[in-house]
Length: 543
Image (cartoon, rainbow, N blue to C red):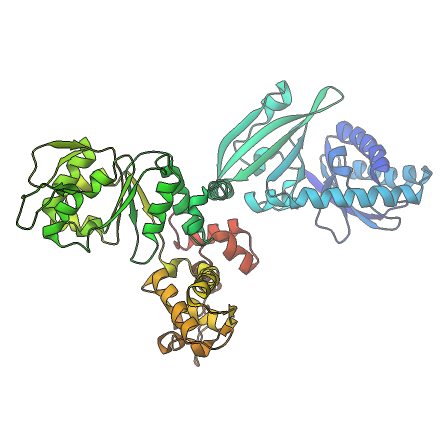
C-alpha cells in the first residue's frame, strides 16, 4: 500500500458549504480507486478525512492557505491528480461570498472549542468503522494522538471495540466496561443516522477515576441536616465522615466514632441524635474514662437503695434516663472489662438490672460510642471484649485529625474568633496571613480543641483588633519546614535526579497539603485524573 503527500494553495475560501462539494467529489475518487484521502492545513496537527462531511464541516481554509493532501492506497498517483484537480480547477469555478465564509468559520471554531473542552472521550466513525472525529479527551484517555487515530479503523485504536452491530443493525451498547492499559472505561456506542440510514457510529467513554470522583462529590454534596451545622469544615475527609454520619442518623444502628482526642467526636454524636427520629427524646452523655471504675456500673445502670454502702436512695441510671433516645458512651475503650459484659447485654437484648436489683428493666436506647483508643490492639491484649467490639462496630465513623485537614484551619479560626469574641467581650476581626501560615505548619496533637484554646489565649491577651504572628506562642512560631516538606531539595553539591523522582516529590507534596486530587490538581495546573493516576503510579494512595 502506497502513501504520497503533496501541498497546494487553496484557490478560494473553504467553508462547510464548499466542503460538501469536496466530500462528494472525493468520495467518488475513494470508491473508484480504493484509496483514503486526508487533508491538513499547514501548521496544524489536525488530520481530516476528506470524504467525511462529519469531519470536513469544521475544515476551514482561507484563500492562499497551504493545504497538505495525503493519499493512501493502491492507485495513489492517479488519485492524487484527481484530488488536486478538484481543488485547483473545480473550486475556482465557485463564486463565494466572503461574509458567508467568516460567519461559518467563526461558528465552526466555537463548536470545535466546545467539542474539545468536553471531559469525556468522543469518537465518531463512518459507515465502515473508520475514525473521522477524535476529541482531545480521547487523546488523553486512550494515549493515541489525533493524527495517528484519524483514518484508522476504531479496532486499531481501541482493540475489541466492535461497532459492526451498531453500523449494520442500529444496535446500542450502553454502560459497557472496557479496560485500556491500566484504565477502566465505561463506554456507550450508538448509531449515527442521516437521511433515515446509518452513516456512522458514535463512541462516548469516560475513565473510571473520573466517575469515582463525581460519585464522591455527589455523596459529599448531599444536603446534611441542620443539626450538622455545628461542625465546621470543608475538607474532603471531614465531608466523607459526615456523609456516613448523616446516613447513620436515618437508622437506629449502633455507631462507633473513631478519632484522636479533640477531633469533635461528641459534636458528631450530637448531630446524629438531633437529626434522627429520636431528636425529641433524651440525649444522654457518659464519659466512661472520667468516672471511677467502682461507680461506673451504678452510673450506667442505676442502683437500688442499700445496694452498697452509701446507697441511701434508689438511683436511676443513664440507660434508663435515655429510654426512647440516645446514649453517647464517650471513651468506650476505657470501660472496665467487667462492665463490658453488661454493655453487651444491653446491646443485644435492650435490658439490664440496677446494681443490687432483681427486676429486669427494658430500655429502647440507641447507642453511639466513641474512642480514641486502638480497639483492635486492646482486643489482642485482652482489655476489650471481641464480641462487644463487633456489636459496636456496626457503623464506624472515622474523624480526621486536624493535621489531616489543615485546609480547614482558616475556616475554624474565623469560627472561633466569632464565638470567643462574644464570650470574652472582645472585638478581634482577623488573623494575619503570616500567623495563619504558622498555624498551618503546626501539627496540632490536641486537634481542634487545642486550636480553640490557642485562639482564646490570643484573643484574651491581645489589645489589637487582629492576631499577628508575634501573638502566637513560641512553640508554634518556631516550627520549621522539614527537608521532606521541600518539593525539591538539592543542597550545595547535588546530583540531578531522574525527572520521575522530582515528579514523585511534587505530587506527594501537593497531596500532603491539599488532601484531595481535585485541589492538588488545581494547584499544580493538572486535571484531578492526572494527579490520581500519578498518585497510584507512585503508590501514594491505594489502587
